[in-house]
Length: 183
Image 1: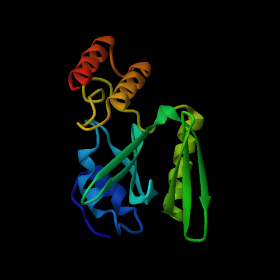
Image 2 (image 1 turned 120 degrees about the vertical axis):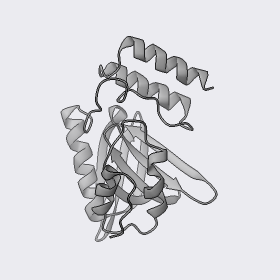
Image 3 (image 1 turned 30 degrees about the vertical axis):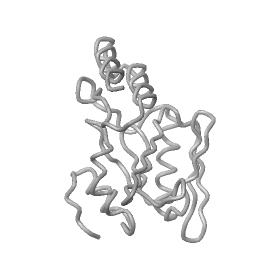
């Protein structure tokens, strides 16, 4: 397996992939879409919304990331919004279905071993009512997401962090103002 030397958490997750074919660019550029203090716990490959990309399970959310030559696609699924997860495996590949707030996302052509492990880990956290590896409290765990994230998603994540007690009311007000000022 190729060494990426991106970040220790990303390198460790990438080393567990059976193949990085078609996702090397995404692995290299993953830090660009991660929020400050967010760490990668698991990676997988698959197709979503018409394109092949990288699925990253972090301590805060599940991310689908495609960094193409002409366009970039980032869609995230905060753990607090995921209501259920379904895995349907074939002989070699399978489909991970994530249900969030009345929506359904099908991530297809995931290698069977990666998809099953990722689905099981997501289910475990949903059943426990926890998020994987909760971020540290304080400024590093409560940082605003990277630029380019849509405002509604950023505000929803901030509300989620506040609801979990990971940001104080003062930090919440300050971050909310920063997000709204970025409009």
